Length: 385
Image (cartoon, rainbow, N blue to C red; front, top):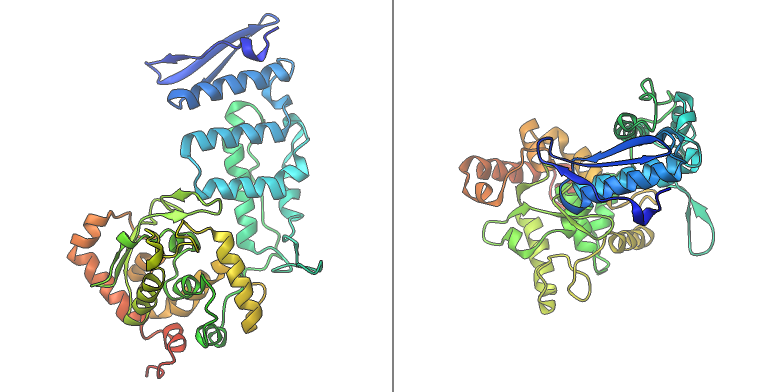
């Protein structure tokens, strides 16, 4: 019987461009492959072989869901890196999938088991410092349940061809009672409270920028001084800081974009840079010692502001992105919405600064944003006719 340290090294098949590891135990030959290049691919092959040996050299569908999910995460990380999608997959697995069926054998998983995960999914319960608990919403939204279903499907898309599961869970549905409303947003009266009498908390300007631009929390923290042209007010979104504090290219391939700031928003950014200049940091919204900030620190700041100003308790920094969209959508053409909100085609910094078309679109977006209710309220302007 092979011991783990006896598992041979995979060999690279140059013709088919994949690693191949072939071993024989108890008269049964098993082959494991990986198309990942270098050490990550070799490691995946050996982990698959070790999994097979531990299972008694039986089919992979005799493995537990927990073990299969762990291998899936490792392979995903080796292939795509630590991006925000991986954070989401791990979170859904840890909170919803593994507690329900993690100890089940893959061979016994049915469509009903997958459906029960969606049907029984409950919002996270948070504990306050005084020991009392609260939930940000009574029920998970239809959008969030669709997210759970999406993670299940992508996991199975990986697992079925590898013989962990027999079939894809086609037919999964979202319960009809799921609310269509997503995260809570700020009303205009809340926005007025947010901008009136600033608290002076460290990340307050970052939160103000979020609600005025619709940028994702990680995109705001990912801003570096080199991304901002103080002469033109043009900002280029080049990166994001995910929930783990890691720098990523953004949520998706379309996340890179440019936005021209209105004079009022530009002033907030300029004030932030001036106030933290003594830290000599490359980050616009750095932490108190000039290093890259973390999303959790911004969430703590938001909770403090919510408490001080009486804002809706079930909101989060990401709610500010939804707030922006809700209060500006009717004022922006579709092509401008896609550009501002982060759904435009991927564009590098050179083309953004060098393209007349994109510059004109960014300028148009800034002009149109300045007359939206969210800007009128934040800066106490006279309502546009």
